[in-house]
Image 1 (cartoon, rainbow, N blue to C red):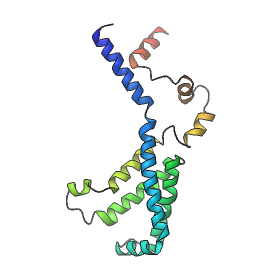
Image 2: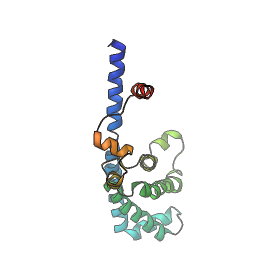
Image 3: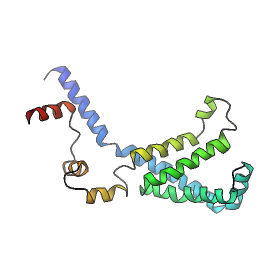
Length: 179
C-alpha cells in the first residue's frame, strides 16, 4: 500500500469514527441546553407574577399568559430535551421562545452586528434549530422505539448489529462493480 493510500485509508477511518460518534455532541448539547432551560423555566414558573410584570414592561402582548407559556415551555421542554424525548417537537416552541426574546427584548438594545453576536439567545435558538434537524442522537428516549421496532433490513438495525464504521465510498463503488 502506498503512502497516499495509507493516508486516505486513515483519513477515512477518522471520518468514519467521527460519523459513528455524532451522538456525543447531540447528547452534550441536549444536556447543557435542556438543563439550562429547565432551570430558567423553574425560576419563571416560581415567580409568574414578577415575570408577567417584566413581560408587560417589554410590551409583550398578554403578559401573564405569555409569561406562563414561556415558563412552562422552558420547564417542561427543558426536561424533555435532557431526556431526549419528543426532542424535535419540543425544539420548535423553545426556538420560537428565543426568537421572541430576541425580537421583543434584545434587538432594541443592539446597535451593530458585534453586539448581536454577543447575545446568548441566538445561540440557544441555533441549538434548538440544530436539534430539530439533527435529532437527539442515539442516547435518547426518542431513539429507543426506532431501535426496537425498526425493520430488520433498515440502516439503523444493520448499524446496531454490526456496530461497524461507515464504508468508504471507494469500497462501496468497488462492491457495486463486483455485483
